[in-house]
Amino acid sequence: MGKHRAVRAGGNDCVRLGGGVLLGALASGALAIGALSSAGLANASCASAGGFNSGSGTGGSTCTTTDRGDLAIGIGPNTTATASGGFNTAIATGNGATATATGVRNRAIATGTDASATAIGDRNSATAVGVQAQADALGGHNNTAIAIGNPGSVNTGPATAASRPTYTRALAGTAQRVASDIAAVPSNNNTAIAIGDGSAASATNGNNNTATVLGTNSTARANSGDFNRARVVGSDSSATATGGRQTATAVGRNVHKTAGAQESAQK
Image (cartoon, rainbow, N blue to C red; front, side, top):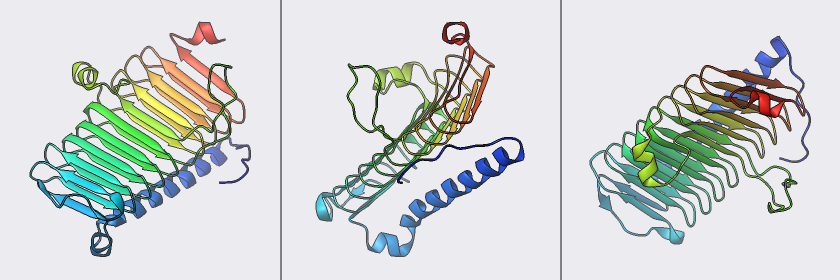
């Protein structure tokens, strides 16, 4: 997406910015869901429904379902779409895209080169749009993860960290991807939305947490408790809310806010 510009927002400008970007996100999601149209199905590299699998599709793509109501569609080379458990939908479009929906009534949509979307649990939804974008909605029910963007600027963190572009990612529900942990510690009604190159949002390890990012190379975390809210509008910024019923909001460039259990340690 080229060079980044700082986001300046305040008052009504902030509202207009958030609304405009969110509309763009919804439009991107609509394009992904368009794969379900008759034209999309006709051009699918592979497709599977209700446990009837056609095996590997064209271009190295694989679509798999196991139960009634499951639907898996792959469009593009090397795509993988898996829907397992009943009434799950997995759609992967783009070279190397992967979509996995496991449990009951989950939805995973991955659109873009090497994009990844995983929804595990009950009525969870994960949408990833962009090169290497990653969205995970794990454990419990009614968790939503949306990641829209391409890799951001090069990571310049600790020397032990690899210097590489950071991909856009969103995580809602349980922080651990291990199957036993997902089942043991369910988290419900969490929402994580990251919109912008190299940004990350996580709403985990609790219930009714919300983390949103509108901007590039920014991070929002709402976790370790219930009803936490972390919001970022801007670039190179962060907001962290932990402990329960905490709110942290960062607006502007290079702005960092914390609330809750980590507040005193990070001031």
